[in-house]
Image 1 (cartoon, rainbow, N blue to C red):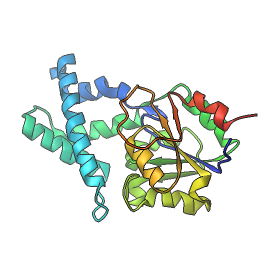
Image 2: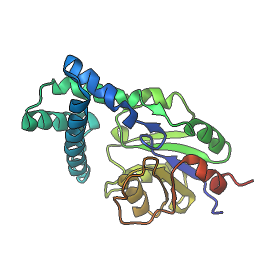
Image 3: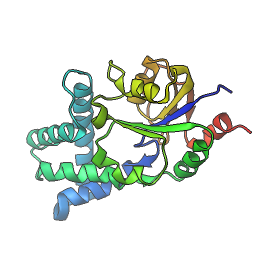
Image 4: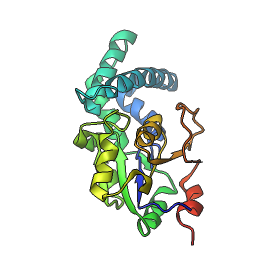
Length: 229
């Protein structure tokens, strides 16, 4: 087993499940107009516009935008182009707060507790602080790295997020394992030579070209790798 010094975690869809908030999100946005059909339709639009906006913005290092700014642009464009009937500013507030209310996966807290006894641990997340204030109080990390504070996203070419991890823990890329669910996690970490673990809890289609160091469907699968007795 390779000996790591630091285990780095993504938050959303890695430790907590935002997808389970979908119906709550759209019930709060649509109110009395809510139907399951509209929920599915609007969620599809949201995915389309959000993916485009986020990947467009995070590709540029010169002008960092918070996720609130990105989501606002996304919802505004979505409402205008699709002629949807809801207040996009209120929708942004609902969407951000839904991240804060997302449910922890069953294996997350126990795994974090056990890992923290052996390794240094940190959270490295593309998020605004208002999206995870509740979550960071619920578990113990040695350090939390948030894109809003650093002014960069994980996949940015400048590598600021993961360089901040190396600087804080005074370690090299070969001493870190980053665990996440997205292409941003895999590509961002691998650019700096950091080992990666792709956690694919929901059987997503692989959307990145590199091969992660590990591929798992739950954190429990990593126990035999990281917590060998």
